[in-house]
Every structure is written in structure tokens, then in C-alpha cells.
Length: 109
Image (cartoon, rainbow, N blue to C red; front, side):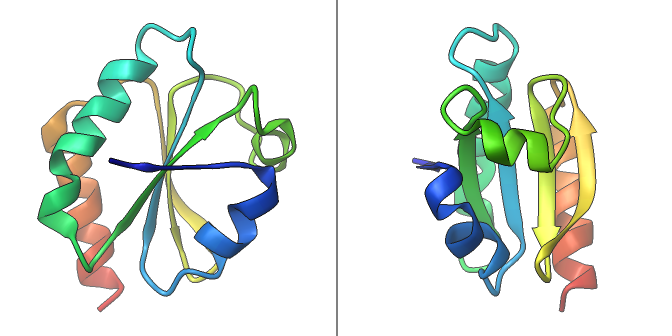
């Protein structure tokens, strides 16, 4: 299961992580957020040891949402080396997420 993080642990769990981090910014009331996070959860095991997956509920973590200018959900951001490097907005297909993560894990190696 993807780790749900908050404003309080964002820096520790995301920015200080040595691996690339796939962050799913969502809300519980967003109808397209659930399938987006579900797809991320399904492919997570394929990236064990190469990518960390986290979920951030922007209603519970407004400071982080504002910090990264999250204006629509779901927003998917890949962080590498303490900074966001790739951003996708809206529902994404499994193939698009895999392509994004494959590129990030190859570039980060």
C-alpha cells in the first residue's frame, strides 16, 4: 500500500529520500483520484527498491499543496534529488506512468 504522508513528514519522506519518489496528490472526494492512485498502487511492486510511492491528501496537507502549486487533482509528481522533475495532471494510463517511471529510474542511475 502507498504510504500516505502529511505536511509534517513531507520533507523527511520525499525530499530526503535517496530514491526517486512518485507522489500522488489527491483528495478523498475526487472521482478520478481513486483510479489514478489505484494504478500507481498496482505498478508499485514493479519498482520496489527503485522508486518510493507516496500519497498526499491535499485537504489534510494544504501547505505542501500550496508549496508545489497543486491546483488540480490528481496531480502526479516525481521527485529526484530534493526537487520535482516531472509533473502530470489528471488521470494517467498505466503505460504513461510506467514510461515516466522508467525514464526517471534510468536517468537517476
